[in-house]
Image 1: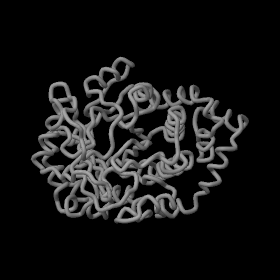
Image 2: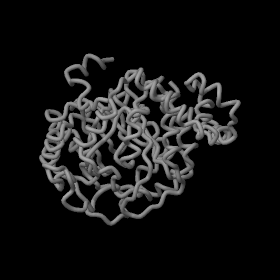
Image 3: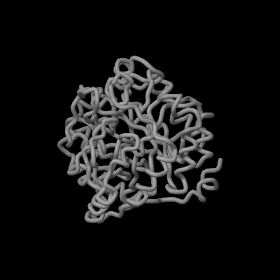
Image 4: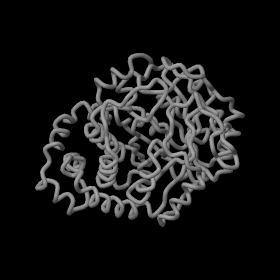
Length: 386
């Protein structure tokens, strides 16, 4: 089977971006009337400057498609950072080894305590996040953390450095159901510049990670591009192509897409390319019109007003009340769920600091239902057996 890296090498991404920039009303209107993008070229038209003036219409299509396939629900989850130890140099990341921050790897018992604190806030779905450091996260530690957390959180996913498929199998067998790996940027030259040292500088190796994870039998696969490193239209066209491929080839897994925009972080890296809120909404709705069955994830990187508006427009999964520092939830007032100190070891500073209860209330006020748990572990082995 041809992998995505081979397909990616032959994608005319520069031409598709230029085609997007040159899109006319004559090209765009038939797509808008149909309410779907059927090809990558049509997707490029939906993220064009011309389509920016039609965001209200694409938003209506996105809302309709999302309600058809996902109902009026928002799945809630929380990230729990295990470690900010990292051997990579990533110029934009607060965990990069060149950044001077307190380095923390929390013990498994602390992981359980933080999970219990999140469970008291209502969460039943958690994303365990770690920097890429074999001494800390590739020696059985993450597997042990998954097993310890699972009785508290029925749904456990991971975001950590790429492994071979065999390296993922023990994590799946421990009960982990999902893996998230962002390509960061699909632009090869920018990727090389942003990752000058460490194992993360292997562009194709990282791109192939979701396929290896699928063979290890993860049932959820998450991908994304970190917007701000390169031209956003180029990035989302590449991301859409990747998600389309995974939807077809990894058909027994739920494919989720993220569009994180760069946030302030230790190291003071400045985004090189801008993307307005309107363009962000445009890209999200275009993805929904092209990939109707894909999950779309929105984190607390984005500001409250934008997150509130996107609840009804195509997002299916959102984080809330988040900390991006290992062990960071221990610094929250457990009754009010507010920070009691600055978090010097965080990956980036979040924008939406509302509590999980406050955000769940916002979801309900818009006529949607916050979903804290959407499956049971006892169903996974039979439903996902191959």
